[in-house]
Length: 289
Image 1 (cartoon, rainbow, N blue to C red):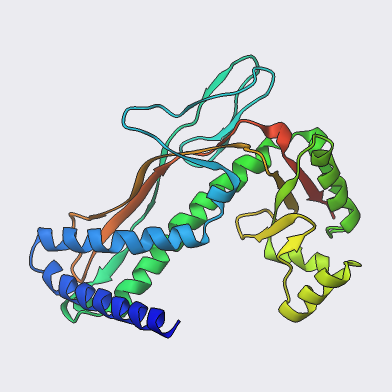
Image 2 (cartoon, rainbow, N blue to C red):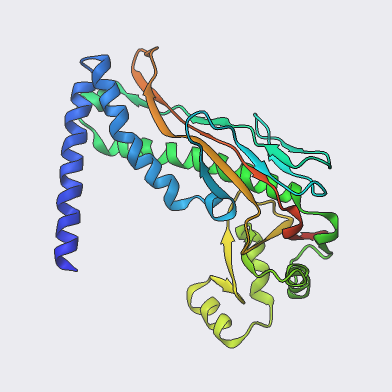
C-alpha cells in the first residue's frame, strides 16, 4: 500500500511538472496551446467518467466511422430520444428502427495568461474540474430527461402529500417485478432522499442510515442521487437494457483561435446521443403536493 501511494505521488509530481512546462510553452505558439489542450483532455474525460451516471442508465455505444446511430425496436413500442438542443422527442408506432441524433455537448474553459506565464497548475486543474462538471451535468440532465419522458403512464405511481412513501416506491418496484425484471437503480434528487429517513427500514439499512447518513441500497437496487433528477420524481431502472447512448467522438479539447486581451482558452466538446427503446421496462413515482 505504501509503495502504491509513493508511486502515485511520483506520477502526480511528474504530471504537475509536465503541466507547468506545457503552460509556459503554450504562450509561445499555437502549437503550444494545442499541446496543452491535448494534455488536459484526458483528466477532464476521467473526471467525467468518474462521476457521470448516464452510462449506468443507458448502454454506451461507440460508433465506428461512418456508422449511423440506428437501433432496432419493437414496432408496437414507441422510442424516445433527445433531439439537438436537449428536448425529448417521441417516435410514432409502427416502425422497427429508430435513429438517435448525435449532438455536441460543450464547455468553454478560459485561463488567464498570467496563470500560463507563471505555470499556475492549480488554476489549470480547477479549469479541468469545472469543465468536466459542466459537460457531465448536461449529459446526465439529458439522459434523465429522456428516461423520465419515456415512462408509460401505466408504469407511473402517484403519491400525494409532498413526500415519497415506502408504499409508493414498493408499488413501482412491483410494476417491474411483474415483468420478471429486477430494479437495478433508483434515481432521485438528494432532497427527495430525505424522505426515506422517516421510513420503518430494516435494521441493517437503518444502521447504515444512522452511521453514514446515506443508504447505498434499497433491497436489491442501488440508490443514485443526482441533481439532474426532478424533485417530484423517482425513476426506477431495471437490470435490462432500456436504451442506447451513442458516442461518435471521445472528449476533444481544442484551442479557441480568437484570444482575449488577458485570457485564452479552449473548446471542450463530446458528441453523444441518448435514447430509450424499451420504455415499458421503466417505472417511476410521481410525488404530488
